[in-house]
Image (cartoon, rainbow, N blue to C red; front, side):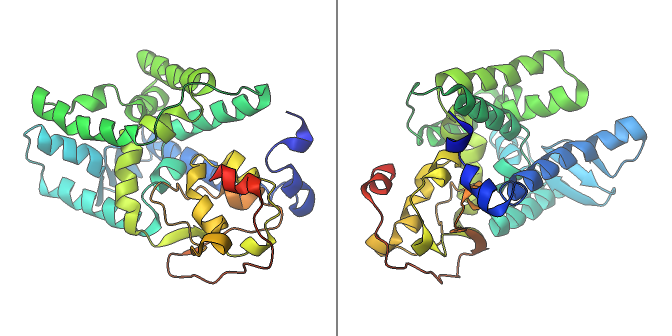
Length: 301
């Protein structure tokens, strides 16, 4: 793939490099800052936050608990403490507002691994691979509490790539790095966006949380779309874009309402005519223009 045909090349030319990578940079800062805050304690003795991604305490005051892990704990037959329930409630409310799968793109350390794999696939022009139904992640999600009931422990966390990646980075756990490598190689050679987009039960769980989320991406200026397809090429969940972008044909609104949108902002970055923007689910203003979407857009849907 040449530099001219890479997703976002036109945006770099028209908007400048920073504007074409703004949301990607902010996401990386967010992801690395989360890890950095956890590292401040053991490395510098500054305990702004204690714990891990599953359960933590900010400034010894504000509890945060991963509701997905808490749910497993309950299915395993353990009654959570009030602090854990409070922490889970705080997290649920937060992601119900900003978008459940914002966890995947703004916090989860595995996202960095799978994004690098996707970038490498484009650079190496690797195509094809195993096709997995995206609904598979919901079947995996359904099996997680079953495993907890059957074993009496939060069994999924023993193999969860998110937990193991965090452990590898923060604690330097050697075996955990093998799981990180396995996810990278799986996404690179076996299935494009195979882990996050098709299998990860945490992503499935947070998509359910984000069903009613307030913050959304909108194709508010879809009339300016030039059908370059860069947004589809770069989006980790490209199927979520079609209703909003093709709304002029189908009557759908401009807001991306799919709970599987990760609110990563990359479609905003790489779009040269600035079709997309962050807004709220209630902002349905749109410029459809007079331009009908061509056949290539219909096929992408």
